[in-house]
Length: 486
View 1 (cartoon, rainbow, N blue to C red):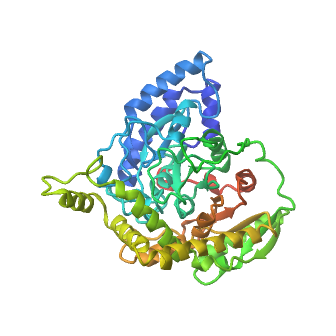
View 2: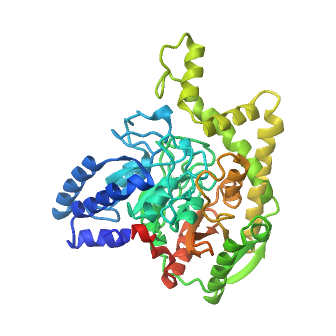
């Protein structure tokens, strides 16, 4: 059953081929079998999932429930609040936090009849590119358990790669869906900023964070986007714009599609093994009638330093609420209020989170705001303008998601700059607020997966999903499973 797509699972349930309970138990059994090795889940909600499955089976039989997600199991990154379920952000700061309400996307999936299997491991407060900063231990890549799965949505990527759920929701701030999707041979999409509500999503960097689905195929991502997209008045950044049926255009022809290749993304820094796989995929698109054109993003080389001013500045503000007073970890026997704040935060946060809080606080401090944060925001606008000009010439932009394949666990933990550069190609897209996605296009000479990044214009997720789906109709990379988890 784990080899079925989300669509095939849904159709099998609705046709009576198998029950919601059978599908739920199949995935819970796989989680019990493989999660100890992969550490992809922090919390498994087995009892509530089985109770949900019984209730949904009854509703389907009585004709009370149908639709895109009815009866389909799924997982959530552990920064989406889930009512009465532990929501940790992979941090000691929230290790015992039980959310009193559902995030907007969690509520939408629940209302659509989905069955929550559990909460995926992640980098602490979504800060990391390898899923090694989690207070609950690092996640392992199913393709090689000595390698990282990418981050911060690495638990979700490993979950889909090993088929411990047919779909999960991740978040992408600077590439945290697209980079792990590349490392783990799965499909993941970061929609346009504002397309999906951030209500109930524990914030890292509010002007960058965006929720998106991770699944085996573009079609499964499209089905999920239909459920979770749309205006939410509780989120001031949620956009009031009609939501198309993302599945309706999946089979449209790509003949005549203008694909732009940013010359900056194919320059020094890209591993030759990765470049070879990406270039082969581009030629496949050309053979199917797409028009390939070189474009330029002249300010993209500034994206990483800009991001590591903007994102830490926003994180230092967002994480100020975790002070040991209202909720979260509180130190024992504080001597006074200052001691309470200092020790609660020192004990609750991990090293990478502390590093980013300090960088962000410095960038926002008196005398440095104009020199760092304000200047970074101005350059961010230039990066956005580069994309605007590129989209005057092409329909979509294509290139690598990451400069390398998955690297070894521990290989970059002592070199934060090298770790930050793993997001070299994904960060510009996030700074511009554009939609981006990754889907599998093959394997490098080292035997590890390679994903290609596709970038669309604002609110053109349907076009991107159509392109990825067409590629997945003539190739089978997205169906390949790691041998040990097949």
